[in-house]
Image (cartoon, rainbow, N blue to C red):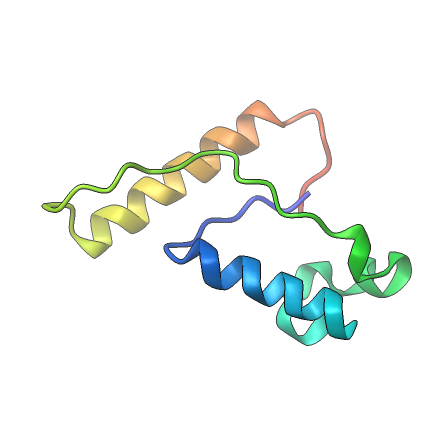
Length: 84
């Protein structure tokens, strides 16, 4: 399990779909490459665990900090499962 965040979910989803269509591991997070090679790109799935509500007055640094906090929260919630 890789818990990560992005401000561009559509792009992340498109990269994964492209990688699965072309069987290319070059478009995924490097931590997943060995598993993708061993089990195939189709073994990877994308699951959105949480969404940070958009706020017009939130700065980029604050957004990044809030996303890191959500990642930490989900790592705690899934602490009984292996993570990268």
